[in-house]
Image (spheres, rainbow, N blue to C red):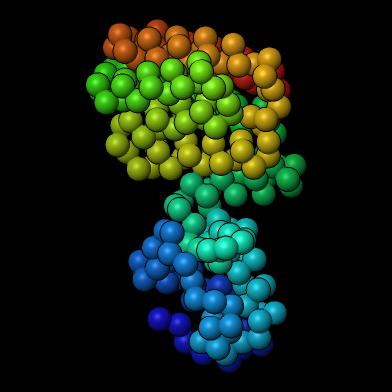
Length: 222
């Protein structure tokens, strides 16, 4: 799968080979790459060169590093990580503001949620209700985020799902969600309850309004 490299900029060639292997499906999401020693041998490069290449691929969201027992270098779980990391890079370069993010999120997620209500899928409704009950008992950022991810996957459209996942990845990596604290739990629960009820009732217009109001409140908190 990998070939020995003879190049003054060997790390770029390593990046390209691993990236192409992922794109070609030779390694899939969740697969662990060979050890650092084995990859260095396969590519014919030093460990320092290999580490530089791995760092580039990790920053681009194609690979993830897991420490500890059972750790290693793994192919990331999907396009959402890559897109989310690109958002993070833009944010850190001051090219993206929190206001920009929430405006874009509202323009995208509000009509998606309205369409979820129009389709009124029983499995989606069941999963949202289950999530709402869990949040009532044990409110957490993770459970609240999952509520939105259920909506993201409800239409069965991979592009919509990946883009909304990418927005969730961005929120997590720049700690947007963590800024709310425990005081926001009642507001979050009430907003999610209203969104759930509007979807359950198959009312796209009401769903559109309550989701828009919810995202507007989140933006104001930040």
